[in-house]
Image: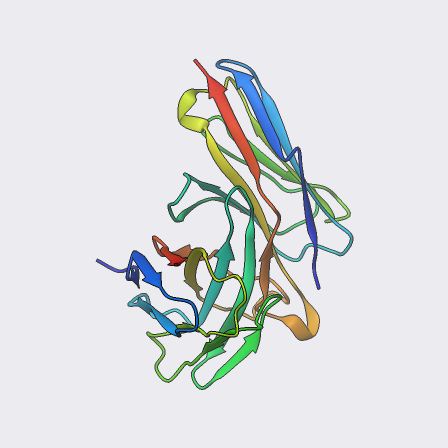
Length: 113
Length: 118
């Protein structure tokens, strides 16, 4: 099955600092999704990447998918306390597991004012 | 408004009892999913269904059962065989498209159900 490895597992930054979260797979990522979660709540969709080399931005968050489609990064510029939460990457499995979407173990982000 | 509704939000169960978590969506989505989340961890896939009357096991299906009798509904039963059922359970749904092989839309999530076994 598709296994996604996120790094780091947790991250503590000072407000205003930039940060990057990585998501790596040993298999090709057919569809790569980034979500944010406040503890004990549902997930909020951030971005979806499909093509190798694709990059998308929303406000201060930028997500990239590498050319080989095996690694994605999420970059936050000038972090704010509102960015704090759990960030999860998810990916579609292709082939006979079409429709199956699994997630990484998450990255816990803390932003100190 | 369209969305996904999970109920109950909080549930307490005694050991040895089965319990069913409800998930309903009015988004006309094809696929529905159940995930389990433990504290400080990511989501692990329990079951998923792409069409009515069909579903597939995820990575941690043991001790759980599902049904998909209607497109809108995908209830999850946590059976007494599940050895460590205390967790946060999330239901999700999405449209499926074969227009691009392997690619499809993002998941829409419910607010979750927190199950505690006493």
